[in-house]
Length: 170
Image 1: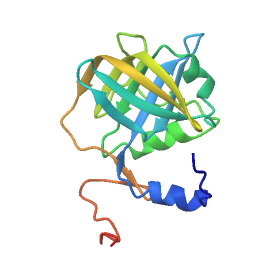
Image 2: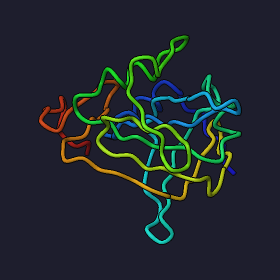
Image 3: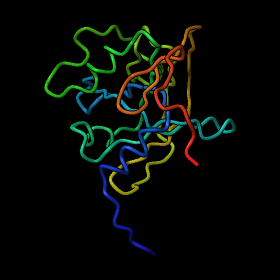
């Protein structure tokens, strides 16, 4: 296998040109205390069975909880929820203090006002480089009719925004 010496800052900027949605991934620790974090590495995997995946960085302060979790929820944020994303990416704060949550069927917390959510039981956990990939079997979900929050080039974007530098590379 070929090892390439990339400048990781340049690689991160290149990855950042991919427009993603913004999610908050939630679960409960062994004591039942809610735990959550902002993540943008999320995708659907399969309709049959219904599977989704989310990637959690091994450097996350929440990694131990997610490595032990057998259930989790993925909450997709709406275009007016950049502050929620910021709260769930902050360290050293009670992320659930100002956020209304409901309890999903699996017991995972779901954000009351998010665009949509997927309540998942753990289907598979995969170690991949500096991340843990959680593949969840969707047990339940909900969706609301509004626009999603996006993230590109290190900032939040909405569908109505015009991206700077819209010219495609040759």
